[in-house]
Image (cartoon, rainbow, N blue to C red; front, side, top):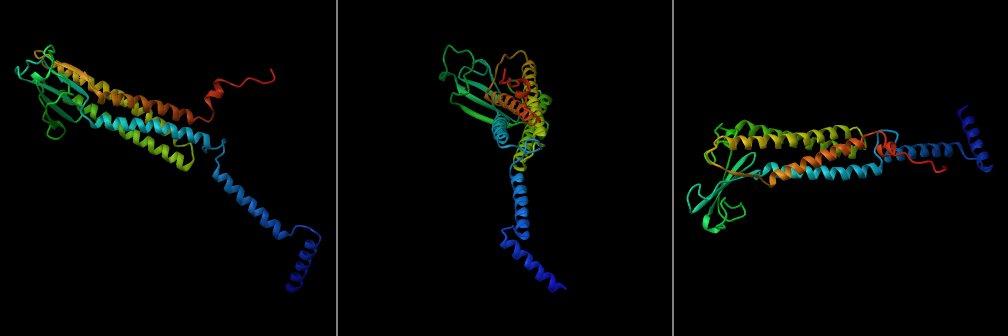
Length: 277
């Protein structure tokens, strides 16, 4: 019986081949190849209707990620340096020969001694930090032993300084988490990670501004601890870096939130006019 079936099957294939009809095996192979190629093509390009990311949207995401990474680098630079505030007394605070200037940040305090003869005679306040002088830096001990420091017979507000430092660390952590979410969104090709990344960046920017506010309040408390010694204070470039970083990450978070929407807000707000009118 099997030999008869095999002979008949071979006769059918021979007849179809001679008549110009596509063989069943060839048709089946072509159908499977087309199905496999279609699946491979759909896997490579993400449809707009699904949760995938198109090529144009991926470019926008990478450009916004560059903006967020710039904010992260500025935050690291500002948090890691000690040029948050500069304190300058009058030239006659110690003696008529030397002049002392101090500056500190979230973790460390530095003092710098200048010679009065190196400064302008008309200047009543100690010179800026750009002048050459003897520098001495120490880390804050209230993170380890709880001891506070004394600058110009004044003591910085320990609780406010610690609070601003913790806010900066939490903000930096949220920035890193947002960057990881964006990297996963681009690598996996899904929009799911865009919304949590946007929330992380926006929240980190808000915490950065709160950190700056708390630190400025700590500086004001430090100056008010002893009114007998007048000091000229000025926020330095580290605060500028952190402030710019907060603005950048907030803008990046808003852009990621817009990119995560299922529709284009520009097309929704500004619909195209009918060309027939």
